[in-house]
Amino acid sequence: MKVEQGQKNEVAILKIMGWIRPNEIEDFSKAIKKSGLVKIVLDLSKFEYLNSSGLGRMVALHSSFDLKGGGIKIANASDKIKRLFRITHLDEIIEFYDSVDAAVRFFQKEAQKENKTGSKS
Image (cartoon, rainbow, N blue to C red; front, side, top):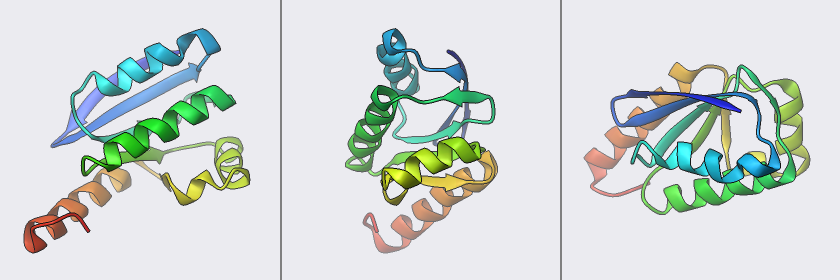
């Protein structure tokens, strides 16, 4: 697994390449938490495989960030990865976008709504 990190406004963007081996689950978590941000976009355009441990960790991290007003959005996922989320019904928890920009825009629109209402929607 290789991770490239970037940031757009208050959104961390992580491009995950390869696949997450069982012995890399902690490294995956650390890479996501490293930015210190709670709004995360995972660019999976170069991602090959996700096992149940990686899937479980991704959902746990999303839930923890969601409680802090953020979450994880997935961009550029293959049909295989989307199917895995659909089969497990986890696509109801973590949203998919066709591009990193679309996922970032979602977070920005959400932040604008929060600023208008003064609370998380």
